[in-house]
Amino acid sequence: MITGKILIIEKANNTDNSVTDHSIKDKLRKWGHEVVRIKDGDNLVNNVAKIDPHLIVLQAEKCNKEEVMESVKSIRAYGVFYSVPLIVLLPEGLKSLKLDLYNSGVNACLAAPVLDEELRACAQQHIVTILLQKKLDASQKALEESLFKIKRQKSELDYHLALAAKIQESLIPSNLIQVPFCNFYCHFQPSGRVGGDIYDIFMLDDTHMGLYMVDVMGHGVASSMLAVALSEFLVVDTKRGTPLKRELEEAPYYEIVSPLEVIRYLNKRFAFSKYQHYFTIFYMIFNIETGELRYVRGAHPEPLLMRQNGDIETLNAYGTPVGFEFSQGYEEAVLHLNPGDRLMIYTDGLLELEDEHRENLDYDKLIRLAQDYLTSNESRPFSMKFKRMADKQGTVKDDLTLIEMVWQSLDG
Image 1 (cartoon, rainbow, N blue to C red):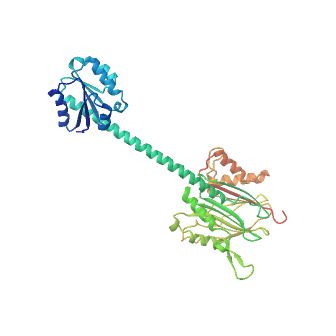
Image 2: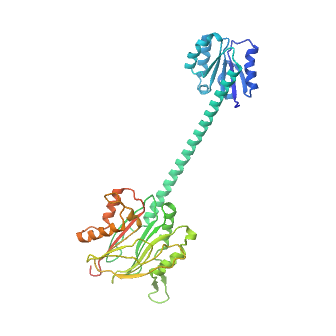
């Protein structure tokens, strides 16, 4: 049996300390309840607030109709009482008053003489109800506090994600006019606040340009952190121990590291066993004077080479993702660009774009679009088509990065 605290309020004019009056209190105590009995008017508000009862019992067996209604209204007038169940013990002759009492906020009316089982069941029912309500209220309060905490944490997370996004965005090259004889069009669009794609374009010396594009496995903060770490690692600064160039004792006092050696080094340096991530990469070294292009492709999507004469080639030298130390099957390939040739490098988010029929842009469609572009003599960059598709789609399914390069040669 569930027990609780019961406050018995006796009408002030109930001066007869009869056995009946005290038997109610005694029975409730016998059934395990904590019972406090006070007279109506004896500092009622303070007493109820102090006792904090689960149930109020108004003993009004010797009262008339007006006195009963006045007491009920008086009790229910205090907000602190209103949520506490109220049982009224009525004189037998006032049974007809029950409807008015229920309309006044009384939860149960018992007419004298009150049967033990009826009183016991009635008290039990309302105590169970109030205890469940208190438990529900406590759960609701705890839920509201948890929601507030989650909301605050989300606000903090959004703030830090916004900072992370700004940091990542700051690492994306914004000014590429320092690369002579080459025109670039670039587009970077993460699928969330931050992404796992990163790229850079830089001069290794006066005649050689370096370009890499990285796509770290997964999405979100962890992938973004590794992408940022890679961008800080792949800088052309021999004082910082860059894997892209090394210092020599004799003129020209530096040596450009081959793409194959770079990717092999990255494969050991960023081991999956350490970072629990792997990434694909395309890294190339381009001679801006001769048009020679040397590259490696660590499982990255095959870049498209759109020749000025209308031919389309893919840069498909073999390579596995970077991070799996056992993988040594990398191939360095060499080719030559002709003036006006167009190279498009991209991450696999490009193939997640949807065309006008809401179908994914697969590799075969990409080749057909490149062929159509070459035959149309379109003046705008080829990559603009995909930026428009991404803008129309709104949110991309995967991080999207595009680099389109056109070599103009020394003669322009």
